[in-house]
Image 1 (cartoon, rainbow, N blue to C red):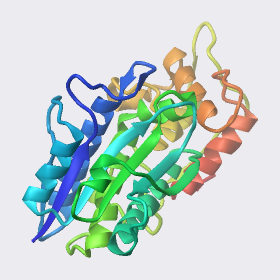
Image 2: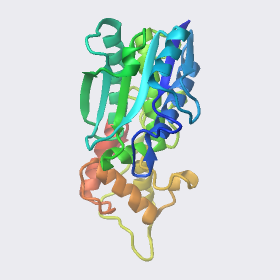
Image 3: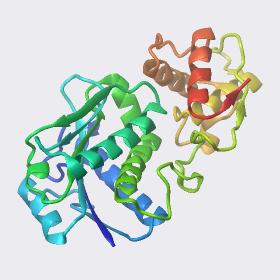
Image 4: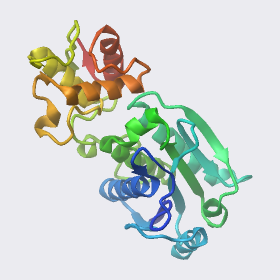
Amino acid sequence: MKKVWLDAGHGGKDPGATANGLKEKDLVLSMVKYAKSYLEANYKGVEVKLTRSTDVFYELSERANMANKYGADVFVSFHINAGGGTGFETYRYPGTAGNTLKLQQSLHNEILETMKKYGKTADRGLKQANLAVVRETRMPAVLTENLFIDRKEDVAQLKDSGFVKAVGEAHARGIAKYLGLSGGSSKQPAASAPKKGAPKQSGSSKKTFTLPGGILKVTSPLTKGTKVTQVQTALAAVYFYPDKGAKNNGIDGYYGPKTANAVKRFQSMHGLSQDGIYGPKTKTKLASALKKAGYSVN
């Protein structure tokens, strides 16, 4: 039985990094829960423990000590970055190599690959730092920094529940690959893919999307019809839901403010002017994003 310790950074009186209406402690707690559920549902011979499953605070040394007493085979600490940068990075204790480096490489590659399915993600590299939780743990230990809470491009992803779920599950796959767990694979199986039109992994059966030409924007009365539905469906497939709270992901055939906001989020992630108007440049970027996600496009 392999033992995995997942550490959600901060908690309780310590919110971690905060910006744009988000708190690091909340995001990472969701991620570790997704990682735990994914490991337990898809792999055999693994037991998973969490530093915290609620909004409570533990000192750094306590976190390491809990994992040490448990006899964990791996320790992974989840964090969200801040400070004006952008992208994803991982840390191990300075001078460590061997299994610790292998764990870092497995996590880094799996998480980064997943993040890139949601848009451009800067690879900040596999780093080393004298951090308490990777210094004081006695097993291979890695700390992940999952985008920047104070960078608008990163925040667009961090506010996407589908993205948060996928990143948590990517941690699980990286751990499983390192430990050589059976009963799963290094790729996300379709059975546990994020809901609401998630992109399919390469090798899966492809769905074909039709992207209309021309220009679509908010008008009075609202523009409606098949073309709008096609755009909404495509946006939902790459996780920029027109309306997360609405039936059918907000795919209603009307080009209203919520659909325009979804287009703006997509445009922000792909370096376009954020005008909320679906036009030729947005169509080109949307087609590219769908193809990268494993879909076919007409």
